Length: 229
Ligand code: DX5
Ligand code: ZN
Image 1 (tube, rainbow, N blue to C red):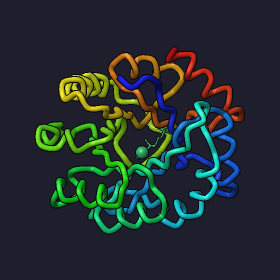
Image 2 (cartoon, helix red, strand yellow; image 1 turned 90 degrees about the vertical axis):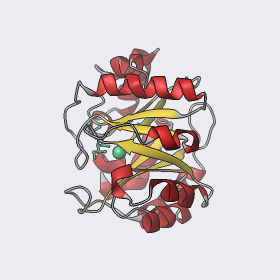
Image 3 (spheres, rainbow, N blue to C red; image 1 turned 120 degrees about the horizontal axis):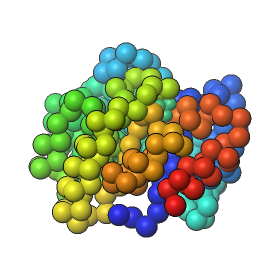
């Protein structure tokens, strides 16, 4: 397991009337990555935002540092189909890591190659009913595996408990492949369940409503880190 846990607030639940300020505040409150939930109203029943949001925030995130003085990674979660063209646009707009759903593209390995060709880190995202077997073929190509602990499309949903077993299975796969792959979990992560999710093997946590839904971001993120320590 990498030596530190990653807290990645999802801007899906941020106040879009002051998005830049929200990003600054959540980084000052202790966030490590900024998670972009990109939805196309085709692969999922919701429509959010495109590469221009990434482009507009990149100059800001480039000058921000997390608690370890590392730059703030733009973590783009594509809930779109097809994937390749939008992935390239997000990479050109400044995404540092792009994850996509294997069932959203015709050719998983080619999409991985397309993202890596943009000098961007790459991840695969698994919905609650999506089997893990594609990892048999491509796990060595990945920087991240993202487990959805809700069905994709909306923030503020409840954590699906069966996700814990899936996280454990992914942790075993990562440990046996020996590569430094991040295991991120997305959906219904709260102060009162983050420890359980970490104990199952996760080391990166997306949280939207749990953070942006509270008045004091620093207090929430500190409580999450305390639960993880
Ligand atoms: C679902 C989204 C949400 C979001 C997190 O498609 O991906 O899971 O990131 O939302 P919360 O933290 O509010 O459950
Ligand atoms: Zn997400």
